[in-house]
Image 1 (tube, one colour):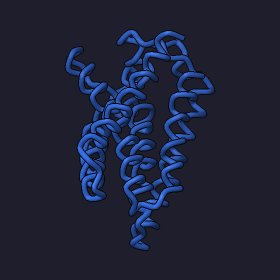
Image 2 (cartoon, rainbow, N blue to C red):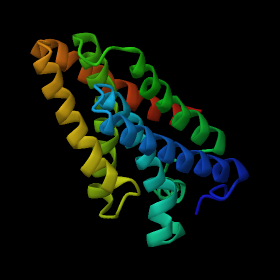
Image 3 (cartoon, rainbow, N blue to C red):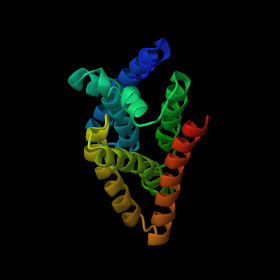
Length: 190
């Protein structure tokens, strides 16, 4: 087990994840009730916070501390420090909040939306790939499969509706994948 998985900073971030999920859920419900076009803007934040709760709270609660994300990562060869948990997970909030600055009916919004959702799709592929290779459940895999994948598909459809070219969709997706894997690489070298 990762000796730092119960570090005070990790426990604090778990509270941030829960509060983030609560805030994102309330925002999503309110936007849905008002039939706001910004409902789409709230989806990445909801999905991201739900994924974090899945990795750090639900999986260990249901399957034991061995399936806390940090313990699973440690067994997989990733030694993630508490400050890295804060930085990598906090970094995800920035694009999930910035997207609210853009009008959801524009092509620019759709391309930014696909960039964000492709980073989450890369995360889903990361979970699925390692889980398959190790023949072991990966904390976060449920949300990766049932939230990240459908949200990415929605983003591709949205970009197509906004008349984004296949090339633009591909490039934004490629950049999103790159952002995710560069972040993992940075964790591994520092």
